[in-house]
Length: 312
Image (cartoon, rainbow, N blue to C red; front, side, top):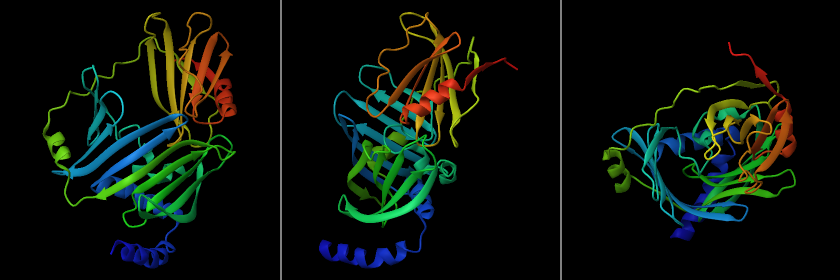
């Protein structure tokens, strides 16, 4: 019977799929991730790291509820109730933040406004293949410039849920892969999500106002990139001040750290691993580190465009 169903899928879905553009597939994916109820068993691969994960999603009394569990190592889970994410980790108190998605699985934009990706990527339909026992349609996200990497995503041809996501360098080297190994589509929300929706989770952490922060700006950013977060804090141990700026185009994320040259040893753990490029340069009297899954030349140009503007 299962063989017969797969054959029927092969006969029916291609004709339907041929009527849809690549962007339409991505828009259907966005809706599916938010509206459907499902359980995914997933392998997340970065360089020499492989993480098995389980992700649950559903609707409980009109609220969107999700749960992500890391299966290896110390306990590391996250629960999302609408726009609040609570992290539950080994040997530390649970805490909550405002967020529209749980980091560590699909890019948040996959369940967001696909239009925001158009400045940086072209959407092109690829071939079809079988993933996790389900027929999938490939959609390629081709960079519109040399400042970001190519992406490939395979969508389930029945539910439009993502089955696989690859990030590739210009040389076709795999930087990151998320692959579903089992997908269960559910009629009702899992009991775990129902229970999570009933729990009283810690309140969202207060976002303290930046103090003594400097108004660092960029005279150039790749098309589609924007500043999404700023933070000014002191490093643990040295208590030296560091300015942090986060950039994204919806997929690629870049972190920029600024400190006074010679006074603040920026974190040694910011090394090039898991596909991350890292560039350190001096800008005037400041030492700047930029790290992200983009070409190193892009990071260097972003650093050189950094300017310190007077506060309004």
